[in-house]
Image (cartoon, rainbow, N blue to C red):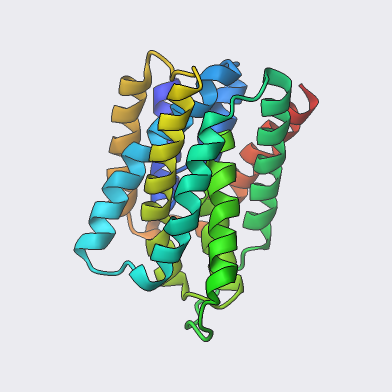
Length: 238
């Protein structure tokens, strides 16, 4: 059941350019996985899905490296620092629950309107945003893409198309260093990570093939938001 749900989550998230770290954490919370396994497992799944999506977007030359470079410059070391920090069970669940609730709020407010990039990206501002998202990614196991795309679109720093293409490489880089940091902090993923990764990759491939015309984006967002809200509240009150 867990493998099937992981594949479905991966398919839905990949169809909108995300890796699914928030939903994976929600799923693991529902299944009662220990906090020491939740973070590295979510990061590991992020790596698999984001690696495929990054390859796909890079092959089609739609990644805007002008914006991505300063984001990675600050987010990667911040994610590594976050990964090296092992929070106690209560603090981790509370922080992760709050992140899930914030992610759900971001998705609720996201309108998904198509707009061209109208502003230049202020260097200090984008570096600061990258550092904040990287730290959250390493600490909790959330890849950061669910916050990155809405932020760039809201601030008119990137069009929706470019924002979606920026998310996978951002998630890949930060999840990789966060995963390494988690290992060094003494946290290890679920023994079933390889099996989960196979189903996650299958879902990601399917998600890039299935046209958004075949899926109702509003319906997808509603389901994902509902899952994150329930899991976030569950973790905060645990």
